[in-house]
Length: 311
Image (cartoon, rainbow, N blue to C red; front, side, top):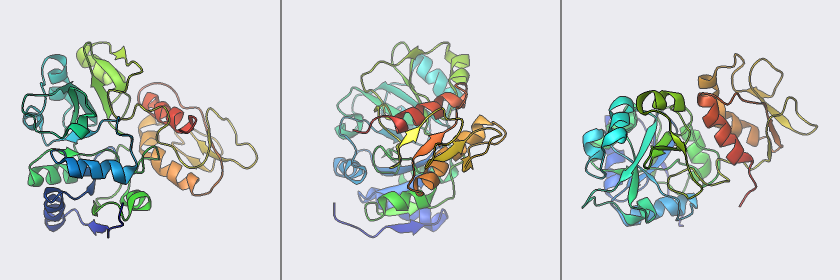
């Protein structure tokens, strides 16, 4: 891929207008959501979508999430009905992605769905993302704005560190408040396809128990090795071995701590930023145990994938 000059845009009217103009011209724009920064391209434009895969070095069998401004817009691209509609009504806008059957005449690039007959849709809550989507007035395919399999970006600086020269612009609206990718739900019966920024318990209070996803890749973020730093990761560590740095949780001595008070929301917001910081130390990373409840399930999912053997 030829290197391009990456501009940094402010989240004001001029910056939003330029982001929308670039998307309409087939360019790639990274923008913040409440979860992580996305790498956006027009989801109807196969050339733009192919550029997303090329910039990330992303496997072509891994589908993308399509971002839209509201439920009405989502209905243009998928059949949103039954329990999926109930979840959309309850949690959109927010950190929930819903996988639903494609509508007739949807107009999306087949690269977005990786050849599946379903599409992953999300309505982000971040005001900058909402502004871009409404001014652009079209569906935006936007995986996380990082090289495929590496740590997800929660600041514009993270995006530039991984993708400068490969993305046309970054809309810098500060750090992402949630800091974990969206939870993904879909299928019949409904299954948890990826834990994320919305806790499974909250979803189940609306639609009842979710089944466990199978091994077939039907949604983003299901690769065994994903979200990985360059350094090796050792999980469930109560202390660092010689030569390691320690990512702590709760009241303990550590190089960085996800949440000294044991707050899982705070831990989720810090996860990727702290991994970026520790990875820059060029030493193996030991990670303290994280409770496997609420957002802890999503944090542990990301950590297991980050620690998995690299492909």
